[in-house]
Amino acid sequence: MATRAQPRLLYPAGSGGAEALATGGAASAEGPGRSGPLQDETLGVASVPSQWRGVQGIRRETKSCQTASIATAEAAAQTWKHVDAEVQTEAPVPVGVLPASQYDGPRLAAFLRRVEAMVIRELNKNWQSHAFDGFEVTCLHTLGYPPAQGQGLHVTSVSWNTTGSVVACAYGRLDDGDWSTLKSFVCAWNLDRRGLNPQQPSAVVEVPSAVMCLAFHPTQPSHVAGGLYSGEVLVWDMSHPEDPLLWRTGLTDDTHTDPVYQVVWLPEPRHSHRFQVLSAATDGKVLLWQGVGAGQLQLTDGFALVVQQLPRNTKLRKPPRGETEVGATAVAFSSFDPSLFVLGTEGGFPLKCSLAAEEAALTRRPSSVPLRAPAQLIFSPHGGPIYSVSCSPFHRNLFLSAGTDGHIHLYSMLQAQPLASLQLSHKYLFAVRWSPVRPLVFAAASGEGDVQLFDLQKSSQKPTVSIKQTQDESPVYCLEFNHQQTQLLAAGDAKGTVKVWQLSTEFTEQGPRETEDLEQLAAEVAT
Image (cartoon, rainbow, N blue to C red; front, side, top):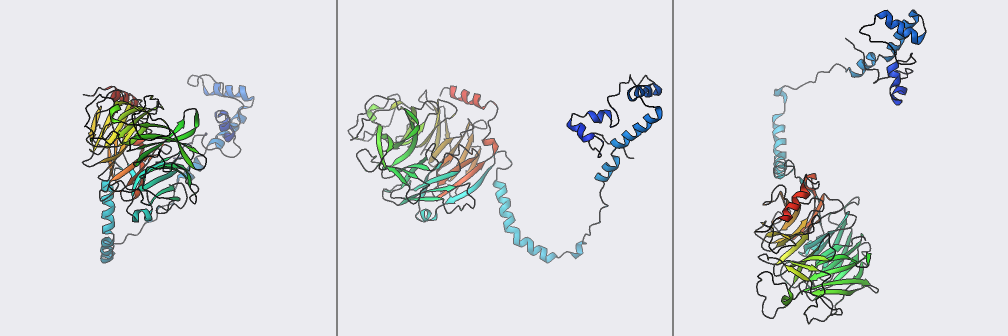
């Protein structure tokens, strides 16, 4: 049996219903032939004639005219014919089904044999996937430069530009050997470019020595600084691959005499829109360079790490006889104090340092500017050299270090002993980075071919997700989060490959009380 549809849903032409919807619904309450709401008393008590009298008082019409008018209004508002026509469907047509005896059994069996290997391969992929555990990680791009890979070069460093759309990598070698004259490359891929070819970078720069580290400029999307095995520091403009070199240190008395393992862009003290390049090397020097005319990087400030000037607040292994320099292998700056930085060292101990240090360094190395001693606090060491340090972007006192002992140490700037120590690998750990958006998430690159993602809200002892970057367990040497497209993480390995991983929202959206949990972690006293 058909019923009346709601008058406010479908309005026949000329009924005034559409206009009523636009003006707040007055017409649907009054009816198309009425001038105002019915002003009748309680209908449960009043008789039918009294209702008609109420309507007569409003309309001032005869009883017969009222009835015709009401009937017309109801016909205009009713839509049951339209509704029924909308929802009814044609009678279903029976689908013919072949009896089982008519199926071609041999052809079906041949088809299943053909696809069996592919189906099993995909099932194995799904079995290894993290898609259903809430922490999904997928590989978006596998990038490489065949001429560099053909030479057996490693990806030693990766960096995202300031827009987050371009990823660059340095090609060099991190194993033992003299790579000072090894022809190497810096390559960049624009991931937003249509028709991206993962084996054909958007820009390639040839370099006369192994490139050990790389860092994009904070505001200039195409400018990138690199440190070489030869000790030089160079800056390139990747938008001019035919003539990319902007500045270089050259080989002078100021130049590093050992490989440069990290470069960082820093704003000038009195000109925040202008930047200098800081370089750290295993010759024990941390130097600041400024680009000047004629393509030259000029030394403007510098520091030297000397064993005799290290703070004596913990036991250190005795350096070899005659050795006075402390080799720097990694550097990270505080997000809260622009003068505060942490150095990783060949000796395995992190150092808390300051750009504002005033004590002169006790070094006889020639330098065009006076070198200073920056160390303020020495932390308990790893069991081997440190390869990477990372300061928390969410807490002024917390930083991470990763070393050849396979451990990650979590330190507070306020005490020498680590707050926590996690063994992630039986081989080296080459890189560690805090997430830029999750206070309790960090990533580490292992010598066993894994990228490991930790969420300390889930577990403080084991990785939340372990991604197999290289199938033959070749080391993963470097990784960087994308600070603009925060779901992206790039990692480079010994096979000469850069993989861009996409993280699920569980890794990019803060959980409840996460900042408070980080504060509580920082307040713990090491035992």
